[in-house]
Length: 143
Image (cartoon, rainbow, N blue to C red; front, side, top):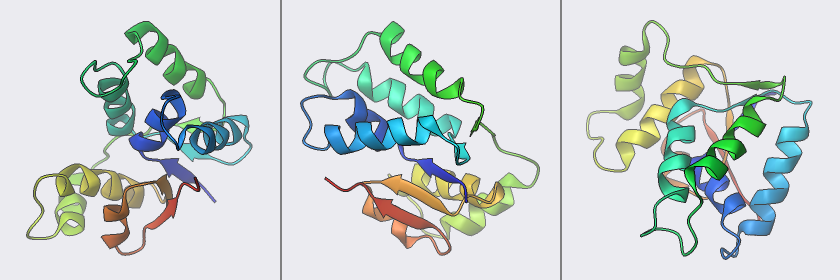
């Protein structure tokens, strides 16, 4: 079975001052080691880079060079995939988002629609909002 991770898991794995750091780092290391198929969606990668390099968000933000090396290390694994939106994505996104998506629900629906389009059933996250999408298993990071 394939899985993905939410940007928050990658952020916790990089932020040593967060209580979830140890659990997140262990999970990312386990997924990076394989052999299970792991999907890293581009919105997740860009969200990670945005957050971990932002001085107003993290007490000790990473330099872009360090953050991008973290991403590159994951992308080098032969079992990691980085698919994007394929034909028909917009209709799938609208069906996933529903009629009332707004605010933080918009990027959550983006990830959920990408998961559906690529047959990924589970996401590791601390975001409870992803549980609202039918057919998506949001696995809480155990802290």
